[in-house]
Length: 475
Image (cartoon, rainbow, N blue to C red; front, top):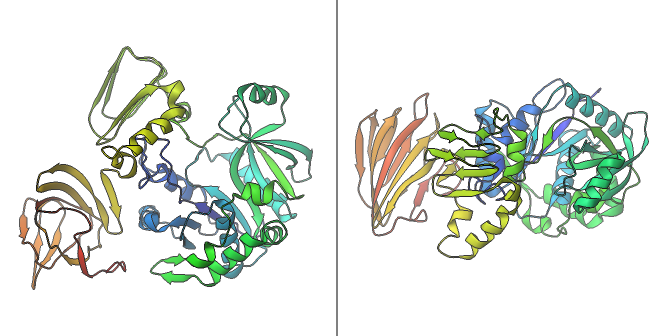
């Protein structure tokens, strides 16, 4: 590879298929399931070799912008850009916008590696050999997709049939196949030459934009205008909403890949999973001698072939087989692993009822550009939160009309502004902020600041915040 590849990471999805850990405002790419890193962070690390890749471009939305920036910062990885999609328009306009940006920032011969942020991939020698072959084929003018070697007759993936083998090692795409019924999937697996559609691509910016002009000119114009009229906001680039909205809601597969004569597929035998269900999480993990995959804070007795995970209470499971037990701080899911594709049905039921709809939208832990908070206890006219502030960050200078607050530092050092007074609080020290008083919290230290906040008042909603000064542009 004579030139570095620009990775383009799609990180705006709001799926809830891994409920209750994944919610609309805290989707799976930003959640830590078993290890210390999120799927998004693992994706960043996979494209962090400076000998192969330029710093990544990330496409996300307004809601996740600070999550993206913070999780990259945790890894000490720089990004080429964070492009903010103003509304959901599927993958075709997003990829076209990225290509237009790459043409401006680099040049139109630059290769782009398009990928989701929520796959689990083993980035071994086999993986990087596939990347190299894809780059060669893309350099020859092909629009390349990575076809995963199927390990079972899965019905949850689209398939690609490979044709003639090219000099690069890629195969001409014979056809794309929608998610098949089981009998058809078994037939394709037995026949060979069929691959799972991974949703990963490689092509030059010039080739993609040229094909867009031929097969999806409306998408091309909308995305190009959205980039040209985009505005820089802190470390983000906001794509123009009016222009972006002119694009049809269409995937890159339907817009280009199924129409072009230049589609190629790289047979990819590396380990890959889209982690689209709890069953796929179980299959992809390292299981014990009884076939169980269990996280910390769990105890299993006479249980086999099961998945047990918790982000809250300790889970004890006895005498079970083929069971998924998943606990967040405020909800528990129990079901058979073989039925875990149907979690979406439960999520729809919960979302349709006013009493439970918030369980599908909001996670007890919310992230902010300065850190975040976890809701610990809610009652009549009071609320308890655990607040964590990243070193060097500060909250907005603000006040509340309906509540007062008590802060107790449990870890680190807090710089607290109340009116004209600024004071330092250390572990086990506390302070009271009266209703209506202007105040601010900052972390001047080198470790994460943690404190307990007790709110009391007639209204405790997050919208009772009057921001006076805010370094993140929210005032």
